[in-house]
Image (cartoon, rainbow, N blue to C red; front, side):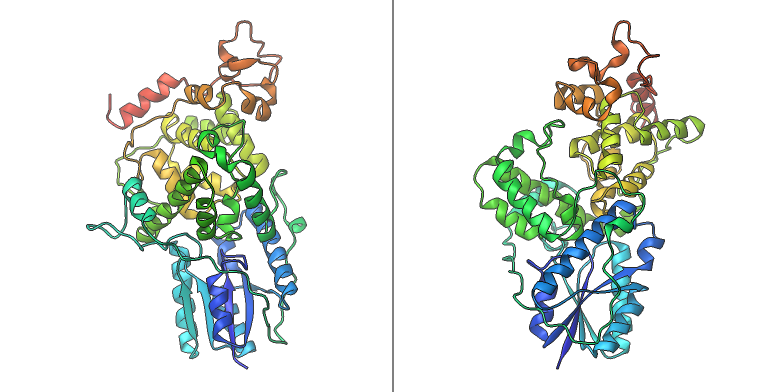
Length: 457
């Protein structure tokens, strides 16, 4: 009997799973394997919210495999060592793995390839499993990647995406391969109280419900903070419980401008992945080199702490930061406002904000988190790097009645209408009775120091 191993990483699903399908087609039996990699924790990627969501995903994946006659094998330790150990136990000929784009993922793939080849085994890395279009599938004439979104979107939209694969009916797993227990969410400490459930079953149900209910209004409503009409599918894309290619196909079958706007957002995700694949150091270094002198010192540290705690004195920013703390997720417009406030108004290094987001975001991955932060900070791919989002104007535009602010900043629940966005202007506002701070900095002062730092007085 021939055996292959499919190593699950950020592709925790059975539907549209090219790596699993290739493994099933190649051999008589397959070992579905997930390794709880020590290096992930050592690198700081194993934040509680993602660890809890991962536990849900693995539980659901194991259940789905058992319904098809298989099971998920769980191991912990050094990924390369554990894969090689399972290869020996199963006498497997080959290992199948979805391609990663980060420097971390690529180093891991190379180590695994070298170790397997030393034992006479083969590693097959499958591209386009975690994105709709593989990074590098389209490039401009003068570069190895697109640095501006619009031409990438144009080229991306012309491509024929692979047709999604169905889930296998049966999965035969060889006997005698030991496994740890599937981890449980309840064993993870420090999880946000409002963290959503994970797993392929949950993701597919959410996708179907969203396409029926909200997709048609997506173009008009996705920036409405209080309306909360976004798909909330980003955690499932991050963990691969949903296929980006399948999402594009399903959205394109829907009528109207809403699904088309959603596909555009999926293209943004692919765009960031192809940038990081070409420039792996953009995870920690400025994509566009700048002579930035980010503010440091005690004042900057205190302002940053206020930002983290959702007590900047700007209700729309604070609401977004408190949603992040409670749900491990933040509305897309809130992310832009929070990031702009830290990097442009407070003029604090974007890496400080990116690290905080990664400590809480359930959908926090290197490509989207870091590249979005760089876009907002003006060090990334934004063609208008000096733009500054005014939180008050943005609040009036995207939370006109103040419902989002009152939901997440209960101290201001009694302030009616649009006045909730500028409580410092209220006549007779009782600071002693309402525990809400003054703004940490005036917007004009923040804009002035930003312009001075960027040489744009």
